[in-house]
Length: 133
Image (cartoon, rainbow, N blue to C red; front, side):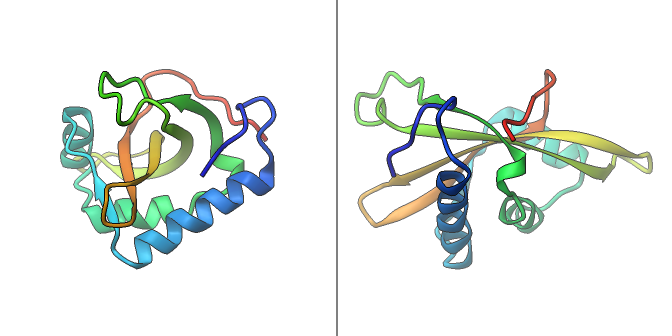
């Protein structure tokens, strides 16, 4: 899916992107990256992958922040565009419920066996994120 720059991206483009993400989640064509930040957050919040998928499925254009070029050294993926979202949820961090602003970075890619949604990042924000809309 091609995408406009963050400045010119439309609500309709984001909604189409998220509709495809939700469809791929329903078809179980999704992968949650095992990056260390993701693993640490999921362990700390005692959150399972199914809960992550539910949160990602609930994203709307209101949660959209920006797009990023994939910063990889692999030439196969340099043209990919990643979508960044934020969502505030309540988490129970070892019996201390509190609000947590999430940093969610998604990639739609074709790995040779059809499209998949890759949840590249799913962890607590390290800086304040601003939504576009």
